[in-house]
Every structure is written in C-alpha cells, then in structure tokens.
Length: 136
Image (cartoon, rainbow, N blue to C red; front, side):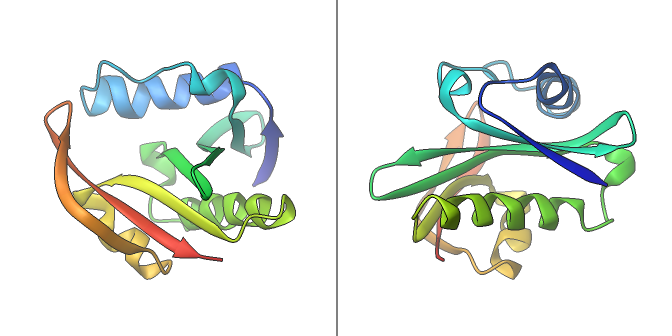
C-alpha cells in the first residue's frame, strides 16, 4: 500500500468518500469548504484508491476527519495506518493533540488507538457521533 498526501481534495478521496459515506451510509452533506484547505491522505493499492482521511488545524489541536476505507480493504489495518499517518503529519507540523468527531459505531476503533470520548453523543444527519481527543 502506498500513501500520498494532497493539499486539496483529490478525485480519489472524493470517490472513496462518495462510495462510503454517501452511497453506503446515506450521508448527504459529505463535502464542505474545509476540503479546499485540509490535507488529504489517500492510500493506494497499486492504481486503486483504497482509503482516505483529512487533517486540518482546529482550536488548540488538529482535527482528523472523513476517515473512510472501501469495504474490500476493511479489517486489513488500513484504517489504523491512515490514522497513524495523520497523527505523524500533525506531529511534523508541531501539533501535540488530535481530535475527531467519530460515528459511535466506530468509537471502539478510535479507543484502541488511544482516543478518549469528550462530551455527549450527538446526531449528525441522524447518525450518532461522539467527539474524541488524543494527546500526541
């Protein structure tokens, strides 16, 4: 698996997010202005994009979001590697903390990576989400 970092939303990341969040999970508000300025990491299996996430500065930390892995690559450790690379990017830019807004159904995955829930569960397009943080 190869990883590429982009400073604007690449077509590969758009395709993955449309497949996972829009078609598979039914989200409608998937793309926003943050995509124009965030750093996007894309995992490649040869010429096939397999997973993606984005990173951007937030208040007092960096935010990791839109973590998406195509179904055929789930359970391979790709999501964990995307998170590791996002955290490495944050450290390289001088960041010391990361936050995310994860789907509650994925909170166990993030807890295994050292993230701690902060606050209450809230709905995002009808799907329960929780804010989580980690000191790097």
